[in-house]
Length: 94
Image (tube, rainbow, N blue to C red; front, side, top):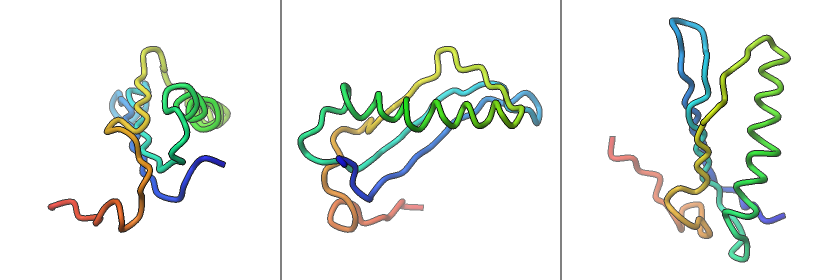
């Protein structure tokens, strides 16, 4: 109930040749309600309801990734309360 529609993700996986072997970093930037705490609510929810289920699904598909020490970065640039065109023009400069 506290998430809003704007967001983006990036997942970094370490490979050995063509085989995925280790989860390195998960970055989630998610627009959210103004009254939530990123560290006590959003980050644990992302870990429990997004990262862990996806790792389980990969394991069920025969893909076991080393996860020791992976980094979960949730809104690493700070609070993300204003989204869409009002918060970001969408230009990358590329």
